[in-house]
Image 1 (cartoon, helix red, strand yellow):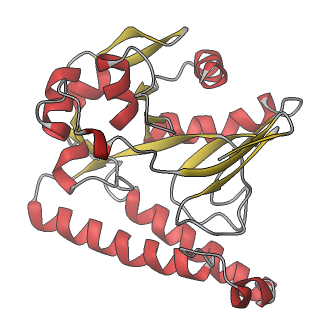
Image 2: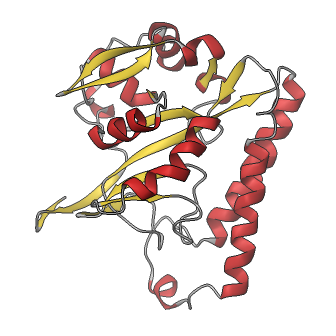
Length: 256
């Protein structure tokens, strides 16, 4: 996260914490104790600036900016900053993309006001996203059959790249407008929960997060209430489980 902050400062970009990372910053002043990832958002313009210029700044560093195009086996519609000195295995997420401890970086795109246009956009996005995930050979579990499958041929890889570009075009469909709401189309939450108004996305403040100081929306209370309800109340103990990482290799040690 310190590297992301440094890159955003260098490029004059306004990142902000979202989802469980925003909740952790407000409720725990850092990570939720049982959480195992970190999520930030950028408006589409800032997201594309980061994607364009960050790789050169990372050239001599131990980080890799993983996008749908920098890693042809990566099927997701948002980018990750990976620590190349680490290796992870994720729960129910087997694929051939590069692996490492990561931060998820999500684009927030403008969305139309009309509910039917919103439904059309998210439906087309999800259909194409699902096709890409299948074509990139993502699976829930590792199997002998999967390991024996030949590599994707260059022609099929070109088709996959074309599908990724089509998906991105759907996400950016309304970004040249003057709409007042932004959406993380790749969100795992119900559609309305991760929509931010222009005011929410443009007014930021800084709060402590572990040893860092990070950007969060000033109106975090409205956002977190919309996403989680009574967000200051801890969930039942049986729901306090890690969601993502199954195994981590770091400094020649294995953590499971």
